[in-house]
Image (tube, rainbow, N blue to C red; front, side, top):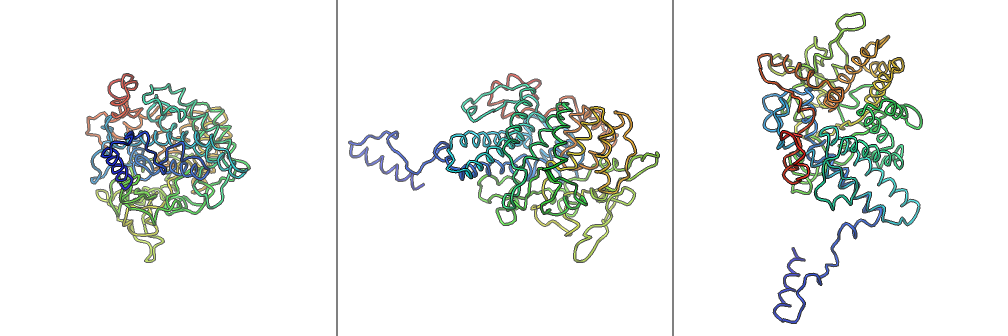
Length: 527
């Protein structure tokens, strides 16, 4: 405000005297910056990288929206009465191209590509003063390539054909057409290859939370798997099973999902909410809209525990379909309840769910108040109820797992199975099962039988981790699976829940209204 006042008074004086050039072109603000004059040092490039990471907590992603988007559409979460508005539409697939959370995710992924492209472009123009600066710049650029690839991965898997902003120069082109999915996947692969080349295997404690070479390898393997490039996927995943990588399964799932974990061997790529400094900064209601510089301040935490919590806001149940999946036939054909149920949800004894909570509270364990028409089955995973009775505020510090080693092992098992190497897949599946005490398979059977077992493993092991929607879509079984589950829950409903169009999210209305090249390429006002 002070600068504006000084400029206005100076311009007024020139006009009054009549002898001054009043062209603003001749007025130079010595303290102004633009992208070329500011991003000129490793320190400012580091700031730009941090801003790119920050988008993982922005609208559409891991502070709030992403768990609703993927848990509800993947039918792992079931709407309870408090769930309203746009979020409720995800539950029955009634969303349209103006859906707020879907539009926010689209917008945030493009913000991430923009910021990552800025880092890559500006860092290339800096001459490092020494080897340490050179190494740091290479690391920052590699981190940016990874974050850009992650955003592109979300865009191509959720929307299919989308505009690709390959580099910072693309920002001069306001309108870009939709690229083919093949072009998008090629860009993801290229960016991850660039990321892998410059990322370290590990970081010192002071850099906890930055992406590693292992994370980039895992995401590249995942990109290959989604394209059914099974040999390439297996080759990437196998790298993570041997030196110099030291990934392993933690002893108990609770180490990942009931409290903020210390550094652990299973996390490959996560959002470390507490380690990023969230408790002491900003409003606990940050995730509800007060983001990117608004008055209440930034916050790195997540609202999931409070919003999903049965003893807090109770917005959702764990779905009946998710609960029932934990009861299946063992190798002898007998009914078997998977022990991971106890780590995943609260329920009754027959379901295998945890029947007590607050086990580690000062006052000791309390019985979970299960009732068929009241509390029912409720999420335990990502909840702090083993340590405290209530959440009290929407500020959970339990890390959001994006890729963990159990996921990598099951993806490797899937790739090996698709390549006909079922014998190599078997120990991978069994190691994941052994962690929780589930019985070991003596055989996975035929290729089709093995795939069904791996599909079930992924559903049980990764429940509530925003994975199932992506799995069902890429396996091509989303419509039949989700409609069968919905029909079982709502037998009297004549509604067709999942339609063919829902394989992809609708192209946001804002993109259609502002980009004529995209608008003319949309069918049926959807995608």
